[in-house]
Image: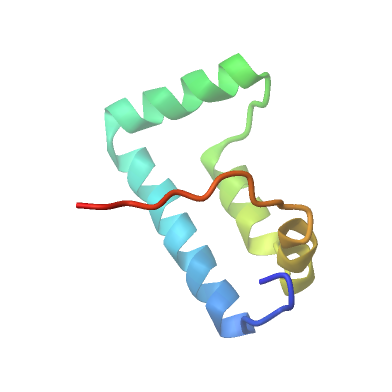
Length: 80
């Protein structure tokens, strides 16, 4: 992602997936309550509609910029 090895279609698919999750949270009372409690505790009161609007505004360049700020902290090896 840091090198931009993803397409506009990849980004649109990711947005659809995220928006679907946000919309399904609205359908479940417990999820909606949890969302708004988290919003209240963080001091960031964003409605579901505003959240979806912000998701839709993300660009390929935004993703690359954020990816370049992320550093590997821990690598786990799982064994059975």
